[in-house]
Length: 308
Ligand code: SD4
Image 1 (cartoon, rainbow, N blue to C red):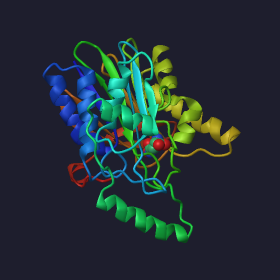
Image 2: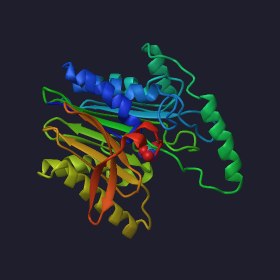
Image 3: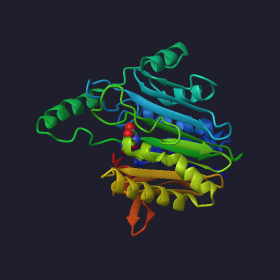
Image 4: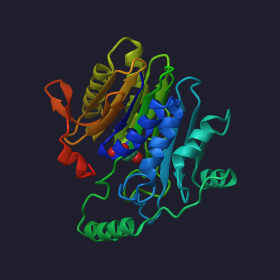
């Protein structure tokens, strides 16, 4: 038994690649790194890796996190520039005992010193979006519209688990801004004795609930991943509305060490990509009264490669 699951439609090709590896007996960690790399390398997706949208200075600053659910080893890079695969750097850092989280030029320097590929991550297409948004912003449109993170979770045939994230964060963010995605407990968490979780949405709000750690804790208390996701999202949304005055997009997925998975959201267009021995499927996450339902997406929609 093995399972790999990722946030959004954009995870699909990566999830399929991870699934191939898991089927051949690879570790969850190898499957995750390769799966996330596939999304990072695809210039079509504007919120992860190559082709990701830049900050307000037109620089592509990327965040990635990686967690080994067996050892609890954790590594992350924040606001890294000019490196092809931030997730691979995060994985390497998860094997270190100190200096596991590196930011900005320090993260880039570490990556290049350790043989990771240097790459200008700004594509022509991303630059066009940037120029267009500059024009739109003159009319005072919200700069932050359009942001997704790929977060993936896997359990392998040995029962080992991991979690990995990668994102360009918010479009038009301030230089140096870091979201939840590379932060342990907020953007991701994995514990092979229980399960793993990862989040996507507005980092500033997801962080307020340390939502990935919260979901793993709920699973540890015996909740099914689906119930744990629903409870964590609805409680954080309620708490933020009541005490902070507002709550933005919160979407999460979780997987336990039995291969059971769950997903929840407070928005209308969240989707998840899941692969098991039975194949790979993409689901829309549909909000119902008090719960969320994963409804399989039709083939035509999947083939459109919608960027949610
Ligand atoms: C961030 N959580 O940087 C990320 C962005 C994201 O869907 O996931 N958007 O705040």
